[in-house]
Image (tube, rainbow, N blue to C red):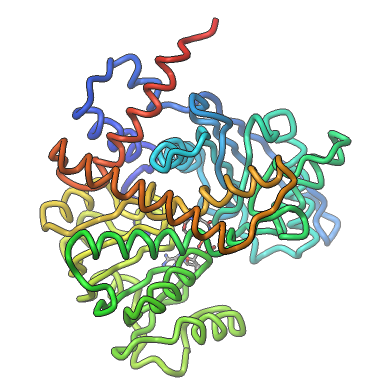
Length: 418
Ligand code: NAD
């Protein structure tokens, strides 16, 4: 990952690029480039050794014009205020892209979870949930998992909130375990929308995905599920990576076997069936048909973009390309399906989970997957329609054109208060 681009500035640039195609007043646009509020808090938590740990945490509520704020909570030592602000803004445009009734939010704690026991992580999470309590709720702001958080953390947040509020409200967070009110299909949802976006773009370009070679950067929740599902479409996943490094196999990996190996050993490096081990940079510049960045933002900067050989990029990660890299790749005619569509499966099935929580009526996995497919395919078609009718330089700008129009319409319909 490079540290060249400030993700918040990247977001603002993306909004400006798309707004150029729309008739939006400058003052209306300005509010779409800044969060409505950001909580910054320092959590003080008892450590196992008797000391007190201090952890900086953020929650950004970017825009609520289309519904309650919605977005994940990330645990990572590199979390910054600007990163959280950017991620919350991308959530606004992601929810608008797929037409689900949410605004955007995001949270993060500056912490390396690998250095803490489960007990310490639980106390950190519950402490953050206490700080979040006045800001969240099923009609206010609904957190979800992101990097290094999952069902366990969501269950802790839900339990803390419900205990303090003295009521049952499973819809206060999504991404919960099934027994705690989670949805079937949620764990796979981000990788599934990545696969659907890949399938649709190959179809749009009259190419056969079953003939494709694929490289996947990042082998966590989003990356490994995307790898498994494109493999099921017949594609060859020839390279995968995680923070430990990358592995290559010309005949394609069995994604499930690689995942089992990573589960046992903690990384993909050392996987015995690989032809060779190489670096993440090598993986990102491989000659493949499809590249799926599924790690963190800014994975590809302008310099690296010049060496990218993939024909198609489907962004499972949020913000994996810097704006300069995006320009280089657009000029090189690389087709990029942007994050706000490709990884929107996560928030879409979170939305299904929230609907089910509110109705206390739970769907089958088949229904979840069918409804997800309908939403992603529809959003993909709206994106390609906008690309053709506005003649946008790339699919990202087309997506933002649609999304910004939806948010602006919601704001203009409601007006300001007071
Ligand atoms: P995760 O923690 O499960 O996995 C992240 C993976 O990336 C790990 O395998 C890690 O080793 C790898 N990684 C980290 N730094 C790397 C580097 N420099 N090079 C290569 N690999 C690296 O996280 P996740 O939930 O899969 O999220 C990945 C991306 O997808 C993030 O950008 C996240 O915001 C986005 N996303 C996730 C969801 C979701 O539902 N999980 C939804 C939408 C977007």
